[in-house]
Amino acid sequence: MAKQEAKVKISQIREGEPEDFSRVPTGIPGLDELCGGGFERNSSVLVMGGAGSGKSTFLNQFIYTGAAFYDEPGIILSLEEPKENIIRHSLDYGWDLKSLEKEGKLSIINYTPNEVKKLSEEGGGLIWDTITDIGAKRVVVDSLTSYVVLFGSKYQAREAQLELFDMIRKWKCTTVFSGEAVRNASVRTDFGMEYLTDAVIALHRPRKNNARIRAIEIFKMRGTNHTQKICPFDIVPGEGLVVYPNEDVFEEI
Image (cartoon, rainbow, N blue to C red; front, top):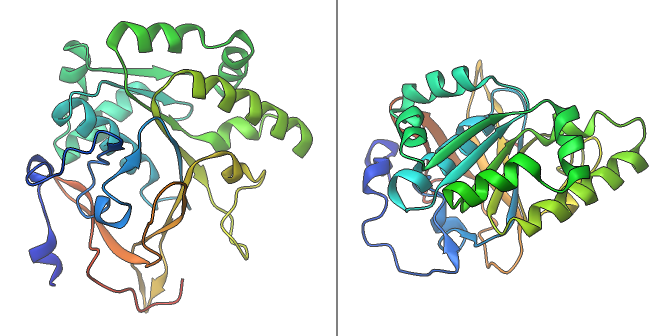
């Protein structure tokens, strides 16, 4: 299948979808085919990759499509990018986050990693209040890497991660995190936080001659007979991420 033929507008992704309420549509054309129809409801998903791999776009697309098309209000918890930048950059893909926020379907919250640490210690605070106020079903956290580097040792980071994930499970939302991947024998972060999540997705950018291509891989997804295949994807202007499940990646990852 040619890539041009595989491109599907976000506004068309609901056509023909089965009504499986145990699954949460990702809002990324082509991805649900790889993971049994979407993410497990109320699960936690870690999206990993290097700089420029598309992690933030992935997270914002998941939140936007949930609020705009699936009646699932969402929260963007950003530990890095200011709210104004998130809103502006999302318009490049046609995602009007500001309007969704005015409609009460979305909330964008900027926290420093230190504030998240305090939030975890207090049991939720503003985030929990916001989840209750808008009836949030989806949460994204960008990024976990910014949080774990606060701690002086792997042990302290591990303890803080456990506390954070314990709090997040109580929110009863489908939660997607971003994290930096280091080049290693296996996909992991500096503090190995992928063991805490229900699913791990890697975004690759291997070099092909004098350019880089994009590829996506599902490393794990509990309760799902997911594909083991590495598939190409694009970040399409005016659309966002589009995965091509019927195509192959021939470059070494």
